Length: 90
Image 1 (tube, rainbow, N blue to C red):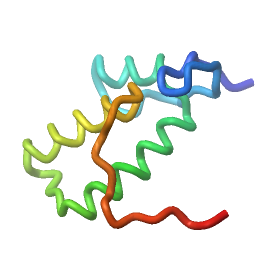
Image 2: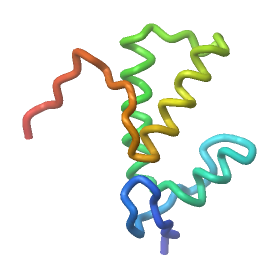
Image 3: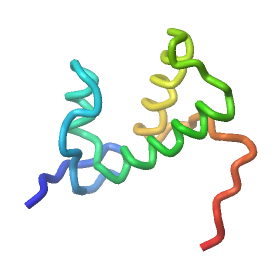
């Protein structure tokens, strides 16, 4: 059986991540408080932001920017979105 967490984004018990997504305290916090669903959604948002804003992940400022956007996204706060993105019709 997979483990569940009280997801801080959705405020409900959902399937948790299999392992911390990054090393250190931040990774442990995400592992304990973010669902697999929320993390996958963030990964999609992150990819769009990197591509649209032409972020260089070797640049510390780009990494700081993404870190801040990730926190906002996971805490249900306003965050930057890819401006030209139109979700596919379902």
